[in-house]
Length: 189
Length: 189
DNA sequence: AATTATAACTAACAGCATTAGTTTTATCAA
DNA sequence: TTGATAAAACTAATGCTGTTAGTTATAATT
Image (cartoon, rainbow over all chains, first blue to last red; front, side):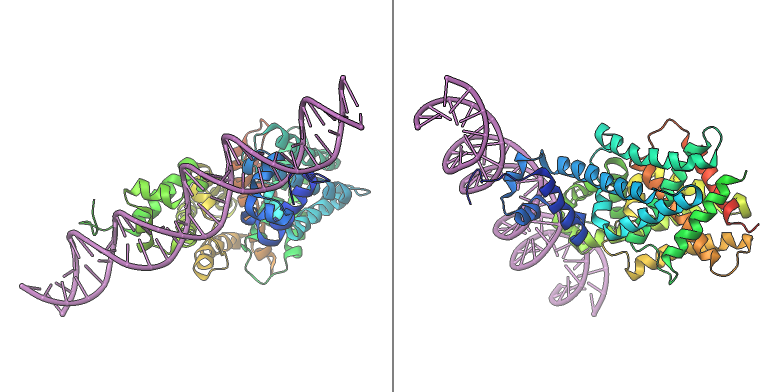
């Protein structure tokens, strides 16, 4: 109840708490006030762990991208080709569905050009590139294809979350059809 | 400089001002304080025109969706099939590029389930459906395809804006390749 | 000409991020 | 064992935000 507690708060505990708020109530509810309340400390004390709200958002973005990467990497184990593409696609969308707050935070860094953010994000790009190597695409086509997949997955997740898909039409089925179509389209010339 | 001016402020002027702030400085800068300053009035006066920040965001979303629809509808005039799909795709991405703030506001309504927001958004969906009719897709496939196109276009625009595409690779070229691939994949063989 | 409704205003408040300065205590060196 | 240091909490205060309440001047209407 006083300065310098027995065991100090770890950054990871703070990020977990922030992620919980984000998933439960939305990213706009992860304020320093709410976060401090959840942790049982006062808002200014958070400044001992990160440099203000912008820095928290950046750290949450990196934290979220890393969690997403782990899920995708797991999904890609032991599969290849179409099966691998479908596996990571489903894993991506399911992650965004189960962790809407963390996923949203993934794109909420104050400066996405930030080196650390880019570096973490490039792990996902690299993973996708590696999976697409099965298709032996020529030249820059593979890179364009990666952009295509990321667009589809992010766009689908984003629209699903914001209620953009209103029609009574199975979402997982949509995803499967969309991914299959894009794979087939990329494959042939 | 006093109550009840000669000519009252119109809602459209307010939305234009808000859109200008959004495009120029980002949506997070369209605060009631900034908006009032730009209009030469005091923040509380804005409550005569809409019911708080949430209502402004909703009105901005509708305003943005309508402007986007106009652009897409124009792009679809006098073209059909692949050409039409490519035309509205480019128009969509260019709109998001030229009006990043307005585009972002398009998805920032407090409640995307809102009837008025859904109704405006369905105009874009309908337009896309009509264009895809050229492909004579069977059953629900057309609806899944619409979801695919929206995912690609929104995802691409969103990632481009947030700096997600880091590589030195032409963006318009990527879009063209992605759309062509998806069209080919969706077309029945 | 008198009334009414409108759209501005001022004043005040709560909640937010943030800064400055303080205090307690765990850790480490002498 | 003791003393110094640094870490991590704290209180207090500031300026910004959206918002509400109540006021006033004027355009429009009766």
